Amino acid sequence: MSERPGPRLRDDLVELTGYHSPQIDVTVRLNTNESPFPPPPEFVTAWHEHLSRVDLNRYPDRAATDLRAALGAFVGHAGINLFCANGSNEVLQTILLAYGGPGRRAMVFEPSYVLHAHIARITGTGLVTGERRADFTLDTEAAAALVAEHEPTVVFLTSPNNPTGLVESEETVTALLEAVTAVGGLLVVDEAYAEFAPWSPIKLVAEDVPVAVVRTYSKVWSLAAARLGFCVGPSWLIGDLDKVVLPYHLSVATQLAGTVALGWRDEMRARVEAIVSERQRMAAALADLDGVDAFPSGANFILFRITKPEPSEDRGGEVWEALLRAGVLVRDFSRWPRLEGCLRVTVGRPDENDAFLGALKEVLA
Ligand SMILES: *Cc1c(COP(=O)(O)O)cnc(C)c1O
Image (cartoon, rainbow, N blue to C red; front, side, top):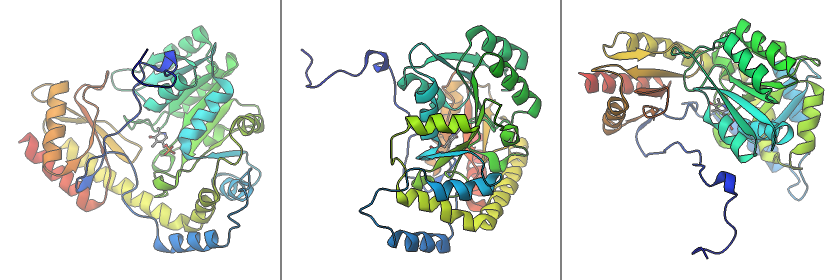
């Protein structure tokens, strides 16, 4: 008998460590890639006004019709096929509930967003891990060969990639899509940072192409707390996701947040521009620092490696701790395989970025 009542966790999940990003109370928080700006107050007022007119005793619109129509018109054209959920993580989970499961495989290329592998585990989907080159680019020939060998039903690609910041080229996405199509699979491009990047694979979406592009309100729309994500894809894919997801999973408050926010698209674009310009300023400052190797980024964060005296887990961890003592929280990847000595900093407000750069300079001196 074990000491506690109730069933044991599923055998295949016992070894699983839950996803967590430590939240420490500190003045400058640059560790989870949220927007540093709150949403416009006029948006919050408008959202509340809409909410006050809702019949709370009734279930929400199961198909999120208004939100899908408004979003479709925003990202593409009216009639575009969209699926919305509680954060893009629920979109990813629904995709694996539909196309993964026992006897099927998902494929990831590491290093990348850990939730892809994590959700594969919890949905009982087999996982095939492909490797990236040392500079985090994808060897497309090797990737295509791996796809042909393992015939995964779902292949994940994150572009811009998290935590590296790398934007996949159109040639890479197209080549991988070809390989995935040949084995009857689905290519899922996780585009959580789309708005910060120079190009988007969303233009590849078509009825006869097995590709889904996943996006979120968590980063650019300043709405991480609202939990809203969506994917764009062929109608058969959206139909399958609608079949699998729980009925009424998306609350009225969430649906309204997504629809109403689109009225502030100019403000959103201005914030994206401000963040991209800050990212460029930070990249230039990091390039000037001795003992730091920063990777090019098309997102709202920068991955960098501490290289002096040499790149190591311990040195990365030391710098992370010293930054924390200086009141700046970044994300520590230094003990992750393939990311030895690496830290990731979210682009914040100019004053926060100055605090980070100043603290890093002092720590390295
Ligand atoms: C932040 C992030 C998400 C966002 O997840 P939500 O559930 O929409 O908050 C998705 N994918 C990647 C790669 C991310 O970095």
